[in-house]
Image (cartoon, rainbow, N blue to C red; front, side, top):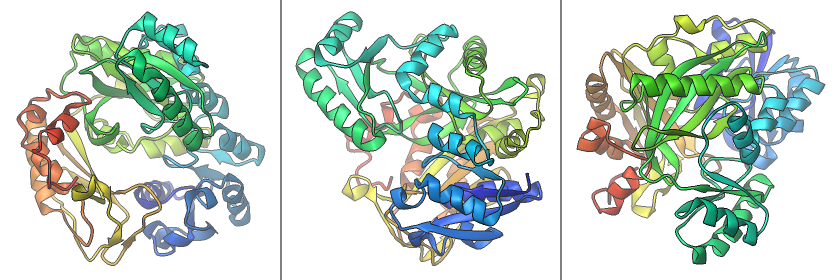
Length: 452
């Protein structure tokens, strides 16, 4: 492997570019018309414009991306996260073109990409799943609903990111929920397939990071707590979880490894679980890619996940063995989104007029913005990830508060003020939260007028 094309944009493209440089790998950036002045375009060794602003015309255009790799002599493609990162078809197309895909094999992506099929694989691997089942018609959905009981979730079988999901609390709500979820799933993923599962109320969202190589070895790098969410979109993540006993932590990690081994997994992946009030955990899905929040795992384990991905894609074994993985301290990530809290968190595009980033011990900022950079309205609103590490969780929260106060972004509205409220929230500080807690907090009116 000598030259890597980075099939993404913004901060993750810059993150991958830096890892490539440390391995003395040449880099190729691809970009849309809207991203001509993007940092990853400026920093890469070469850059190729692949289409118009809309993602389907550029970052989702697999044929054009592979053509750019051929044009520039790239022998590997790193997809980052989002866009084509979980496309089994694209991974297979890379293989057919003789280009290394920096991620799992197409077979693993396909197996885990269908959530209903993934549930079956999880059960076969001895991993507990939330009660539920696939549905193809209203009568079948009603039968499954009566078996598992209300409340429940109707979910898209393909895709993720909180799309194609509806909460149903009684039989009267079920037909409309099925129709809406199917339409949204078809629009977002091109697949209207659905399944129904029991709604585990008051649950935490905890995920286990795994890493596999072509020699069949899979290791876990412990877990991340991701329960602070709004509309099923994560806002704050931390490692390790403040709420798991050592026994639950070990059981979840072992389950994640079994699942990854069962599907022949290589590269970085994340197995996501719901954890109820009794610390019983249930498999949700597997994300067959690098996660946005991978940095907090890196901070507590010292393992560079992107480096490991690149080495595995080059045919090398993992540099880290399971017995070498240890958790040191506590790390927290605050997602800095360009959103307007006074307009239902609507994206806030615009020009970054002034920018001051925090620093000091244990502070990391992954971003691709700069003073004068224009935040465009065509993509995700994430513009920076502020991460902090400290020996204890309490110290990490204090360091997070200090770093958030130092962060200054003028020209667009951001989530920074909300994060400042959260680091001082009593339940957040105690770790006593669940996936609905943030929305409950905002619904009380306490979050009104606060940027998020």
